[in-house]
Length: 316
Image (cartoon, rainbow, N blue to C red; front, side, top):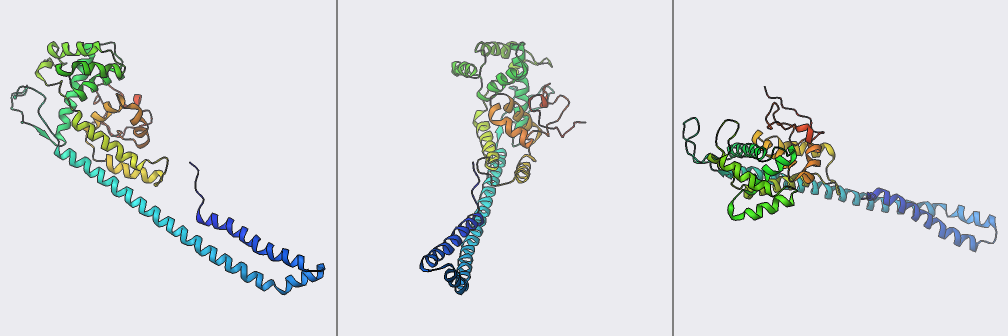
């Protein structure tokens, strides 16, 4: 997109044209009316003050208009900046309101945990993401047992699709269709079902003891759409209103409060089914650089998928 000329640039060009016009017309008239060159020079010399006054008045008038326009443009731009900032922070606040209202049931079907204590009836707010993390972690194990030949990205994609859309007999064909659409073998769905019924995790717990096939798309769909739109509101390439440093500072404010379980879910969302939309933003604004290291991602390497992200957090 070409940059528009500023009012001052427009005024300079217009002023040169006006001066040329103001001088050219009288000069031509004087030249025609004069009978000789000395008479022409004499008429110019006698009227030079009038020429100067005319040019000065035209310049003053033009500069006043250009200054007013330039000031108006600055005020409009500042107003736009403030409006976009207000909308951005409203979307950030909406993110946290959604998070505060979030409530999910325990993943284990039996109310008593493996350690013998009774589970709460539900997990609320940020604690709900610890349940999401546990579900996604177990689904990654399920998919690996269902097909050990899958590469890391395909395994993450299959696990995240089940995590998002669920696995229910009532919409089994729809789940298979989604797998086909995302480039996965639909027979993998059947194998995943079998592992969920008879398989065990790395700690020897039966997958069937957990509600791993439940859907999470209602909340997560709104959660990630709001996040994406908030970041894109600031990351305006076609009509930039903030410079790069301002963009980074605003988005850093947004991501500063994301918890580790949130970052965990984000990572698998970003590398699985929405890579194209998120990858440029993740690299540009270091969205998940605070992810813990040392195995937090179930063996996945952050920089393998996002080479421009420099991890900051080192788990002790």
